[in-house]
Amino acid sequence: MKKVGFFRSIHVKFVIIYVLLLLVAMQIIGVYFVRQLEETLRTNFQTSLKERVNLLAYNVREEMEKQRAPEDPSLEEDIKKILRDFDAGDISEVRVIENRSLKILGTSLPGNQAMVGQRTTELRIKQSMVLEEDQSAILIDPQTGHRTWVLSTPIKSGKKVIGAIYLVAKVESVFEQMKTINRIFATGTAIALSITALLGILLAQTITRPIADMKKQAMAMAKGNFSRKVKVYGNDEIGTLAVAFNNLTKKLQEAQAMTEGERRKLSSVLSYMTDGVIATDRRGRVILINEPAAEMLNVSRETVLSQPIVSLLDLDDTNTFEDLLEESDSLILDYSTKKEKYILRANFSVIQKETGFVNGLICVLHDITEQEKVDAERREFVANVSHELRTPLTTMRSYLEALVDGAWKDEEIAPNFLDVTRTETERMIRLVNDLLTLSKMDSTDYRMKVEWVNFVDFYHRIIDRFEVAKEQNVTFKRVLPDDVIFVEIDEDKMTQVLYNIISNALKYSPEGGTVTFSIEIKERVIFVSVSDQGVGIPKESVGKIFDRFYRVDKARARKMGGTGLGLAIAKEIIHAHGGNIWATSEEGKGTTISFALPYEPTEEDEWS
Image (cartoon, rainbow, N blue to C red; front, top):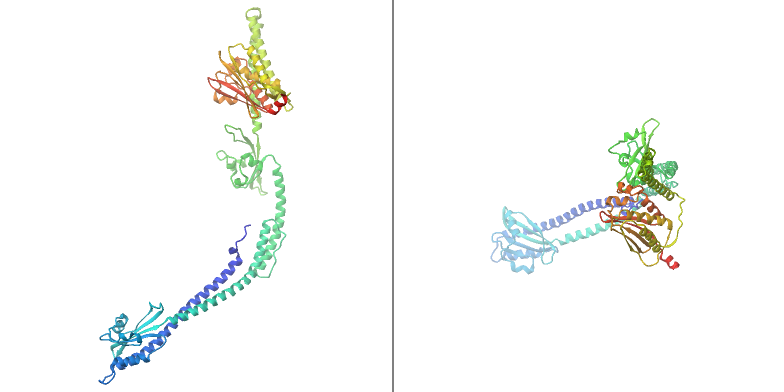
């Protein structure tokens, strides 16, 4: 079982959820608290300054409405005196502006006294006097980067605005206080979260420990270990679950032991069966297939499970699952191709419950390919032998009947009839001898008498015999090495091979043609070939000329006295020597029969 990742653990998830819930709650509370506190501090700050500004406005209005004698101080001097007393640490500057000319009557900032008597350009001052209400805003001081609060308050005399007071205050202290409060709140949150995380870990352990034990037990059960028990920590829901889990483990152990016993019995039976076995459910889908069946059908056991059996056996076009349930005879499954024959026999047996309902189907497969091949070869062999024997026997009977009827008295006809009878008798003897040779080659106790032979000299001797005895005008060409080549062979059997091959070459060579004999050595193999310039063999027949009784031109071969077994015998003898034989041909140009034999140069050195 795949190990659970750290962040996917229920323990970690529980702690994270617990901490996140607390964090979200504290953040919601913190945001609300900070906003309200900031709003309260700013409001208190502004209210306090507005009260002082209102008092200042009252004093300034008294001075502006006062009747002045020539000897009295000017309005600017009185306002300057009032502003000198209006001083505080949070106030940067206070200006008094006259309404009609927008002239600055006074300022509390000593460095700005040059502005007294000049017209003001502040928009908020004009707005407050026109709208007859306070105008305020929080701005950023471009020189210090600190936040400042500006306030423009109209000075009214009755219902008439006679001037305005413009205040610039330092509000940065309020935000500094908020920063300090935020740091305190963040530190408290971190401490609370740390303590909460520790408590969450301890709390999660009390919940997840029994679950972790059950997880370990489940993993052990998956591996087949049912002996372990889950510890019960309490009588709560998790404790009840642990008790139920232990009971389940016990029942599973009993069921697994029973199932394992039955499985071993079934596995043992299926493993030692040579036949293929397939089992299906009641819907015809494969639920079991043994290894022989998978090999017979050339499928993977894992991929065919749950596949319909009619599809697996390639019976979709001819049968349904219901047809197989009613099938009492065997079905022949022919999977043969052009290159290879492959036939299976399938027997079916229905699996029924005690109630009589169909619970599935058992299919047993038998590979009958070799049996079918043997039967086909046997039938073909009997037919060929019967045909080969019937032809000369029919001829002999006809001629013998003619002789019995009086033809023996004719001195000209009788010798010919007897000669034909003798020829056909020899042909049957050759056929029987060839059949006996093949029978010996097919027997399991067949042994050859092998010895080391100089194959070049041996080949020359065989060729010399044919060259002396040949009747047609055919040239022999020898492409043979001068070196000594020792090969371990049965000389008599190899003589028969070369006689059969050379005889065929002479039979099919035209007058004035050439038969070429060659030997070539490549690595540890000696290649021997005989080539003629005859009519050649059709391409589709080249691979069949080594089959028993096979003839390319049956009429011509029978006329020449061939039995159709010569090359088949050559093939068996060459294979018995551990070699291989083949043919290459081109129609109208000739045929080459070649065979290869094992060659050991070290043995040759010992002989020399």
